[in-house]
Image 1: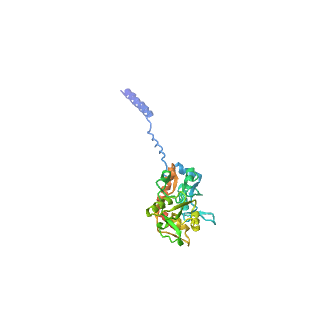
Image 2: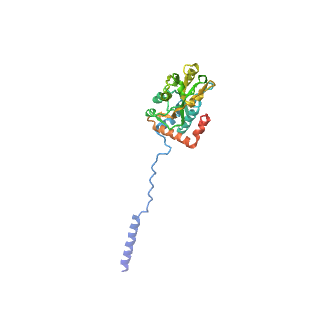
Image 3: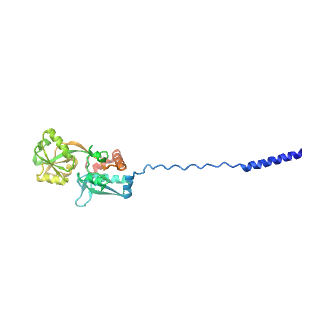
Amino acid sequence: MKKIGMILTSLLLVAGLVTGCGSTAPSATPAPAPTPTPSATEQAADVKAIKDRGVLKVGVKVDVPKFGYKDPKTEKVEGFEIDLANVVAQKIGAAKVETTAVTAKTRGPLLDSGDVDLVIATFTVTEERKKSYNFSDPYFVDGVRLMVKKSAGFTSLKDLNGKKIGVAQSATSKKAIQEQADKVGAKVTFLEFATYPEIKTALDSGRVDCFSVDGSILFGYMDETTIILDDSFSPQDYGIASKMGKDGLAKLVNQTIADLKKSGELVKMQQKWGLK
């Protein structure tokens, strides 16, 4: 009996050893690596291309005091719209802004060809133009006005019946004035010029009787011999234009305008140049 008990004890010990050898300690399962998520500040391809280049190319006016004007002494282009271009460049992360002089006639083609990334050049937003370009929300609102010589004695558009009005090529001024002239029964003739200084020269020489463009532009050409009539037509919304298909850039530009409006910085920029 004692012998049988010893045998059973031995068998139990062996079984215990086998069981112990077959068991393993539980191992911790590694946590899966987090799936990378796109950065909130990740840039669209068209915006990144400008950042990588380091230069934002912008078409600007160089003959519009306060907006975009080339100082003949310093050769430096400055104004409200130049400041705006610099803010957009900062948002993109571009090191500098490269400006190209544009007119109402050349700004569209230069944008189409890719010579400039943006046009910030008193570019009025219209439904027709929105078919060809991306436009930001307005950063400035103006109206078409009339500048005449004080000595002429004109007081309104109606007084310009039978007279010649100088306007810029491809500008919206011509259509706005023609529509208003038809309403008041004034028959006017238009002469188109490439630049604003040319129109002012034509007014001074008597080649035209009136210089018409947006009021804020006219004020930059006033002198002691001229006046700007009270008439104001067709509100002009200025927007920043970009090429169709450059949706990332258009979105960034529009957000920049929205941020400037919300912070009040846009008004401060306008006030800096005497535009408010």
